[in-house]
Image 1 (tube, rainbow, N blue to C red):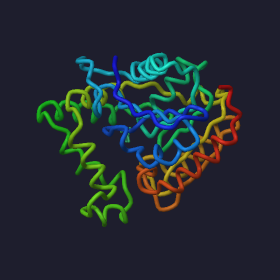
Image 2: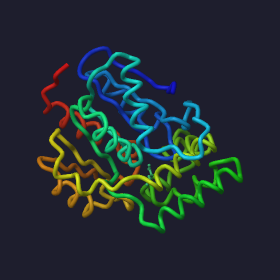
Image 3: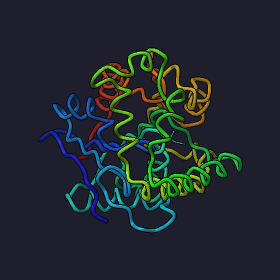
Image 4: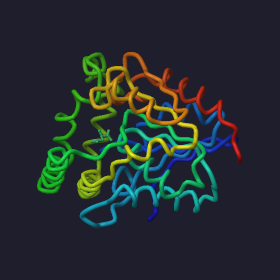
Length: 265
Ligand code: MLT
């Protein structure tokens, strides 16, 4: 599987970024610009999303997306990295941790969780996947999802040029319908990692917007408490898309965490 990816920075430990659903690697633009001064930052588009082609199968599992990351690292001859995944990128991160533990130095779970879908949520995803394919477009999702993903403040400045909302809408509406539908079905059948949390041995940061409705602070605290030595960073004035809404605070939290990790590279 050939992934489209951006690689930035020429020195320092490797930092791999996994985007959320149904976005692409450009959601990390502010992190790439800042962190590439001190890290080698790699930001791929997951299979079927952004500019990476879909595999053509009806379901793309989180396992496959995690294996794609390992293959990408093989391709560009990188042994180990720290990984940060937002929401769906976090689900992929859990599989990457489970399937490729030797590659992972540390893990940032950003506005995400370790659970599987409830039966109702899984059903809804399957319906969404069918609708995306029927309409051959992801455009309807931008409107449906927006209130769950961004603060009222972000939404209030929605129409200004280059606003977070405009960038969000572009990523969603321009995404590949068959790739996105396939990944939605993969999320519906993802594993529950809750019982494995206590076995995490690498440094871990749980990072989330304080106003994230999908990954609320109480749930993030509970998750952090269940993982040995995990740290929690809550970002003020940010919701689910914290890295886009409050890039400076997010970058600072990421830097502080990454700088506390002794790199083996
Ligand atoms: C995401 O941002 O990746 C999605 O909210 C994940 C999900 O739908 O569970």
